[in-house]
Image 1: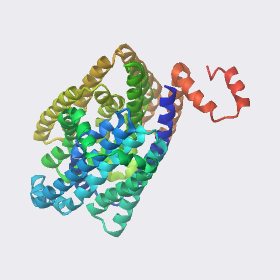
Image 2 (image 1 turned 180 degrees about the vertical axis):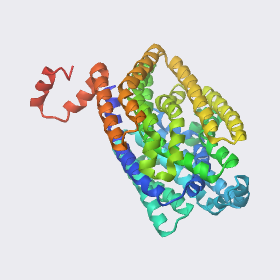
Image 3 (image 1 turned 120 degrees about the vertical axis):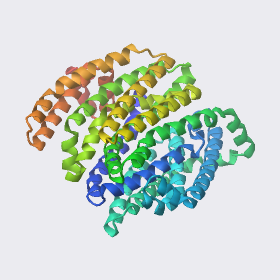
Length: 496
């Protein structure tokens, strides 16, 4: 657990910087581009996201698994070949039939920008496999700086493009440039491994492709279903409603998922490495699953409670009055996104435990559920009802997935259920002053002050009541302070 938290700290340092800078620049972006342009860019990114997931045929999950680095390098090269092939085929299809796709979603503007799709898919795929390799080699410093570069450069180029000419191209091209720069930087982290390329051979690549064939057969299909379940809302909102509604949804998801995904992805990467290591050493993963999942609940639940209370005021203040509707959408989606936050890191167990068939089943079930939900909601013509059904269904689907993984890991349900119940009640209790202040319609800055005090109070309670969290946090702090202060901390009982 100590090495897990140490590696997590290294990785989340970079992701937190990227998160803060990215969020600080989003208000600038929203004041340049209209909700309609956000909708066009979101459709482009949703199409790309689906293609990126299948670009490596899910062999990028294998990079972490072999005991020998030589085998991992062969898998790495296999992934590159798959990515280049997929992006080439995708480019031919989407560029050749660009007008047809524009007509399908009743969004003709998208046809003008699909030429950038193969480039974005190629660099996104490379970004994913570099994540896998750098995580395997525990080079979280290089990885975190790459994440920062991607986030910051994307926003900077989006703003610059918008100042030159306001169109969806600025949003799309900014994303392409950000990924390209991040990939070029992260490639420097492979300098120490150049000699491993000598071990790459067609024969060994073929052997490893066959050895891990369940990943493309089942894992890739499941990953495609997973990506479709994430991107289906964008497709369905574009189909049933308007680009403006899709733009509101895009900002709501961006504002919530940006910090959540960055931190969650960092946790997932470190957890995957730790779980793989523990399985190789002990044959089981129950200890790391129990410790990580219960602490994710404890640490993650309170920010979501605060967000539900303040969402509309936050969006109006930060992004401008035109984005109030996006704040309403974000409030509706917050409970589902909390379920995603606490469960998604441990979904890497599907790979560690080699449960690709179960992964496929869950993803297909989720995708089918979303088709039903958005068909019913979209037919009603009410986007609020549609997103409410989506959020409720999401909590249920991710809850079932969590129960399955906990059972398969042998960790037991008791700890997770107790942690969720306890910290939900604690969060509600601590946030009551903020609820009262919001009901009285106090000034926004006063609400932020109360939220800040409540946050400090909540995490101090966690710090002093959770012995594992306290011991690990103090262990990291002790490594950063002079030895003469450690005795003072022990007398206060902080390091016990």
